[in-house]
Image 1 (cartoon, one colour):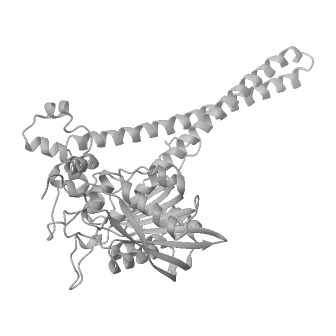
Image 2 (cartoon, rainbow, N blue to C red):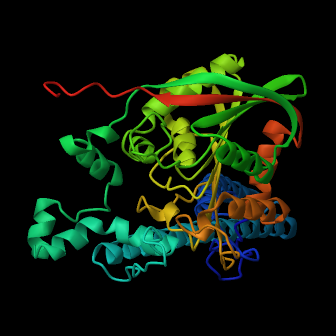
Image 3 (cartoon, rainbow, N blue to C red):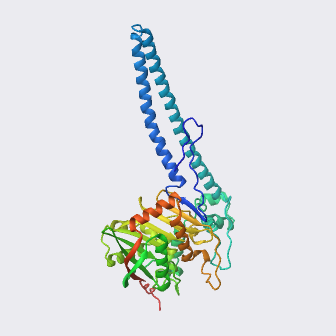
Length: 456
């Protein structure tokens, strides 16, 4: 974990940025730099307590030394030796106290430098310095790499202000470029336009479909494989998996990615309008449908749930982690997302998550925010080159395909990186390795929009 310089070594304790693990770049978790700082600051606080104790011992040692002076004449040699010994012990304690104080001060100085560097980088980005260049691939929907998309979306309001010729000072006064773009607010503004009323969230129902007993690998890779099967063999369906482990039940909710509607805003809640609901309205209606599906599958209040989603489905899955109504009903323990823009979603404390991204996939950057670096939240960015196989459909980018993320999840499972090992162990502790489960499909249906008033 965090490395602390030995006493007297003269070095400032500094956390280390986790190195890449093959083609995987890792952020967050127990090996993440922010958690290392949290550990160091906690250690510095503990050192403060020791320093106070040593100060009290120093005072007491000096009092004992002073009390020995009247007795020195009784036996000069032994009395002098005793006084010297107590004095030297007090000075030794003082040296240890000073070293502990220095270590604590160095830790805090290191933390201040880190915070300053983070703030400086944020200011540079707001000023437009170092902003990634947005590139496009052969498909018009392929907006380029993940980082380029995140940078462009984050600075969208600033770019629009400059395109309109708004002076920087006036733009700042008007609030046009203060802070990163709020994608949710932008989507809500679009949905408020009458011409885009079809994107507005509407109630969603869940009707039970096929029930199957089958063997499922409950690792992240195994669940993504099962999710791929759900998304490619059915439309507007999610799957609820009942897991029996050590006499207790746990549940897995699998939510596929976007299924383009014709037209959007129809009966399939996982179409393009579902993206607006996910990013603009915190998946309010979809979360209700997931609760209904769990209830009809037999999940009891308070039972453990793991949510897994790809692309849009990952946003819905992650939104469950802050949905107070859902959390009041079920104990959501873990979320797995693949290719999902979820940086702006803050889960309730104690809910773990694993986010799989690819640097060639623009979709995870579509919200303009990077995933926070926290103990319970691990983000894995895949860096291996991705090319289309002969005859393979381009989609919205070859790196966004769920099969690519399944390959990344397999590498995660084999990794010895501390953050990934801890994440894998947490998920395994919740669900076990896998086995025979009961899987229930639920078809989601969005309510028909009301007929326009005064319309023909």
